[in-house]
Amino acid sequence: MSGTAKQLLGEIEGFLAQFDITPSKFGVAAVNDGHLVAKLRKGSSVTLKTADRVRAYMASQRRAAPSQIACRATVPAAYRVLLIIGGGIAAYKCLDLIRRLRERGIAVRAVMTRAAQQFVTPLSVGALSNDRVFTELFDLDDEREIGHIRLSREADVIVVAPATADLLAKMAGGHADDLASSVLMATNKPVLVAPAMNPRMWLHPATRRNVAQLAADGIAFVGPNVGEMAERGEAGLGRMGEVPELIDAIASLLSSSAGASVSAKPLAGRHVLITSGPTQEAIDPVRYIANRSSGKQGSAIAVEAAALGARVTLVSGPTRLSDPAGVEVVHIESAREMLEAVRNALPADVAIFAAAVADWRVATQSDQKIKKSPGKNAPRLALVENPDILKAIAAERSGRRPGLVIGFAAETQNVIEFAQKKRKAKGADWIVANDVSPETGIMGGDRNAVHIISEEGVESWPELDKAEVARRLMARVASRFADARAEPA
Ligand SMILES: Cc1cc2nc3c(=O)[nH]c(=O)nc-3n(C[C@H](O)[C@H](O)[C@H](O)COP(=O)(O)O)c2cc1C
Image 1 (tube, rainbow, N blue to C red):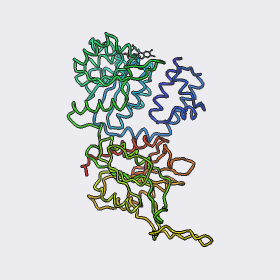
Image 2: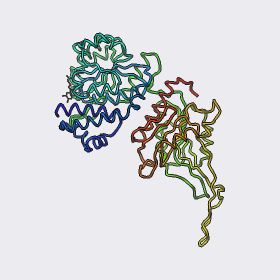
Image 3: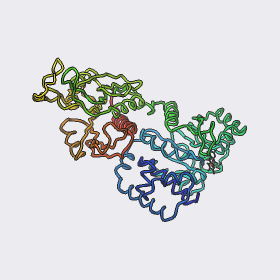
């Protein structure tokens, strides 16, 4: 693989992590080649002309989306992680790690070894951490402004990921011949290492000795895991821990060192109430009015809220989904039953109304199956309006009204405009708006493209898995509570 291709791939990986688009969509949008990223990852070369076009595309997208970057930059940083990135293939995972930590309000400053810069670029790391990236020990500016001693002390925790065999050896031996190892020698803060290497390197007696020494020195470890290696056909113990595992380990180290409870479970002690799925409005004992909602989005939000530590009540209309683990599910059929179940579940800190509630029901439900009378006129169904659950709960008196009321708006035209009006008319705090025109495949599908409408404005997210929409939405909810430091309901 040429140097140009390697550097370009690092920049692309940073861009993908920052904007969350799939590699094939990126390739198509940048140079009309859906396999571009896959080919680069396999080690193919690239012409300078293609590299220029890809870079121009990334620059234009970054210019077009300043609000997305600014929004992340404003998250208050309660804790600081100094991330030392070592020279292994798993360095690309650090881009996602930085993003996930920052979503939790944790500031990240990065130090990269020389070898690490062969795998990801300081440009990508800096774009995601929104901070300068430090690479050189003998950089006069760094020494005057910050210096390796200050760098090592200003963080709450130091994380080494990927921790190469070489970095582990240096740490165990007390070396200090570059910025990363000097910082590690100078620090008085807890250190967490995430080893990543070929299984033979991990099992080598030298690495065994170094790991035992570091554990005796009080260094914390996360991973490695068993799994496939980047080298074809190699598998075993040596794969770096996944990002959620690293976040859990960092959070627990922060909690014990900072003496405060930190962010792996930022919604602990909160009650999150979610509605989901369609409602069924009976016409007679066998027929009903319904809609195409699958309940997938509401269910994914419930899973995510529970993962962030919340007590979750999911009021769900009839779906084909199984009940999510760790969530209290109340099964209902009609809109009126849904409203009653929601009221019974109050108080809540957050209420998220993702259900597709039928707007109307038949005025008079027949007790008996309505008989077909061949040759005669078909029966006419008179409809009456169903209760407006979102509006009713948003209008609850203070103390009963959830601190954050979030509605969903499914539209087939003028999505943002209608949703902005809906937010005001219903008294909701946020509206999650999506386009459910049949060609989008959103209703019943696995993906969603939403706009978050709040008092502060509109934030448009790219098309994402419904699970990813749920994850981002709940991260936004968690950071809102972290900002407000509101009392639990
Ligand atoms: C393609 C490639 C992949 C590598 N992957 C790893 C790895 O996953 N783990 C590791 O310990 N070393 C790996 N190495 C070797 C390190 O890059 C090398 O030991 C380097 O000196 C580590 O520098 P650092 O510890 O200062 O980052 C790899 C080398 C190459 C060329």
